[in-house]
Length: 524
Image (tube, rainbow, N blue to C red):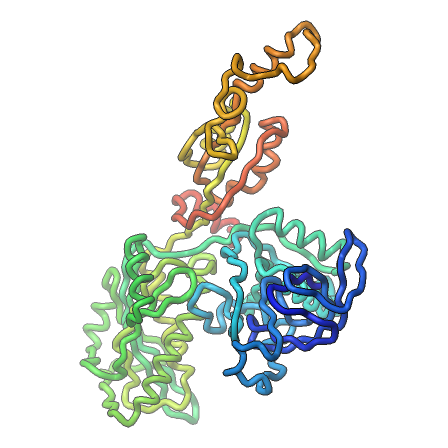
């Protein structure tokens, strides 16, 4: 069942519509209902401005826009070319870790193509919690995959990543409660027989120092010629100022390519040009350097590599090489050097790409060389773990402020940013009474109250209660420290406290916390 609101025209039963948010696929409305609480009443149409429930859609997600087939914005689009596509398979909305190029806009790699007019959808922040999930038996896998795919259509803030190297499915969500609800629905409501792992924070990895590595991949394949590829990879951390500048440059069609998690890549346009002759002695000097090394893998010899001479006739090959380098880099940013967390906030420059005199028909050596060079550059740049930090707004009674501040600063590594009186709905400070009225100004003449209850004057007791407004604490707190905070808040405020939070960004962890995270993930 899908709830829809009609903004113009009329949606009729058995009508074929176009999902303009998802490749322009066609869906048929099989039934239309008007809901009265939990009782559906079947109707023939939904008119403009009304909300109804439809059945029959299989590939439409929450927030998608549907249009009639004769909508004016679809005139330039050939709907007859829309066919069943592997993208629409149950696993089509799943992202893969480490084996494919992701989109450059911060969304998942399975982002859909928009066709025709599209209404403003739901802005979804990146997920910050994740759990592993796997079927109990092989026979349960099909039901688990089908159920997860249906949940993705219903809840676009839910993400599923397939870790092809680890063989795990990672279920990612907006918070603790979000994943708890999904877990409860899967096991109790949808009867999925699966094991759900411990809830973990979605950390990131980056580097502290700039690093430069020159690397040559040299491998002899029996029965074939030797494959040899070289390149120079430079990585450096990205500051807030650089991030703003690069985001502006990318929007103005600069040479930088933006990948996920604020990673920018610059790839040299020339292939096999320049002086690539490096002697064995220079190779040794680079290897022993602090942040620059010339590395060799495979069965390469110590002879000097000779520069290839690629003319204008191989521009197509050059473009394929650059594309392979970009795809390999895009896939590598999802597994950092410390504990395989995704990378963030990096500038990656790749230059001096050399094919050493041959025109490749197999681009696997280029991909392997890029991956290995990038990995070595990261390892020599002092990698560090970043953690998501949240901006937390806590509403609590004045009497609980001290104990809450102590809890936040000592136990949860928080930084208190503001401490204010809670504001009323119209923005005026709520002091004693309504909109700043004092206890004496408060008018209780319209209310009948006994003169005394339990030996205390009711007027005085009411005025004293209103003279102590709630306080709002604004703090920056690491997300990992917010696990279990809702229970602690209820306990410390006797149930009268509440909080909301939103992601503020990421920040590097201290050395002790980093050691604890690595030990927890590796087990040693």
